[in-house]
Amino acid sequence: MTAAAPAATLAGPPPGAAVTDPRPALATDVAVLAGRHLRLMSRRPASIISAIVLPLVFALLFFTVFSRVMRRSGIDYIDYLLPAVVIQTVFFTGMSAAILAAEDALSGTLRRLRAMSVSRSAPALGLLAAELVRSVVSLGVLLAVGAALGFRFHGGPWKALGFPVVMLAFGAALVTCHIALGLAIRRLEAVTTATNLIYFPFMLLSSAFTPASAFPSWLRPLVEQQPVSRVADALRALTAQDAALARPLLIAGAWLLGLLLLGVVGATRAIGRPS
Image (cartoon, rainbow, N blue to C red):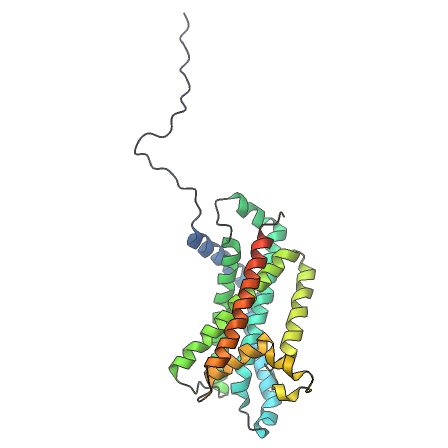
């Protein structure tokens, strides 16, 4: 007589047993992916150069060349220059973010993350967090060098605290747009070309390095109203002693909110595309 085989049971786990929750934890995922990107940046000399060396080179170069000319016009050029270099640094950060986003898409990292229990928005937010950390490091270096060249916050501690807040808000908006661009294009050469086509017109046709009054009259309205000029106005208002704050901050804030929404929509659509 043969023994009957035991019947397979389909019962669930015994009462009281712990059940693993497969839902992704956004904060944890963002922190882990941000740490990954920071480690990648630390191993890339180009990332360190664009974060620290290039801003210092531009600051020293422009200060050496234009400080005497601007002083004749009654402008303390280091106070005028440092907000411009801060804005330029944010652009370099955005370019880095676009390339890293495109690399993640090309290498299949995004596809693997989508197959795991990882929050859908964590890859973009992790990259954004890492780039903002890099921006804070760049800002600290620039402020130290600027102080050595004579830069001061003339409006008191509250305005001084507002300066990095506006810089990080600009960084969040611009980097988000660049992440969306990198995820949408997904070709390194094309991403580099596209980011340069954004950087040069917005920086050169702005009041970042040169007052708007130096531009031809037909071009001046565009120069004065574009977002880079408006962010520069807000940063300079935060460094000046008696400058009005409400209008430049509101206009810059409106531009940054629009850019952030554009970047969020673009990144959300791009990150869901099949690789």
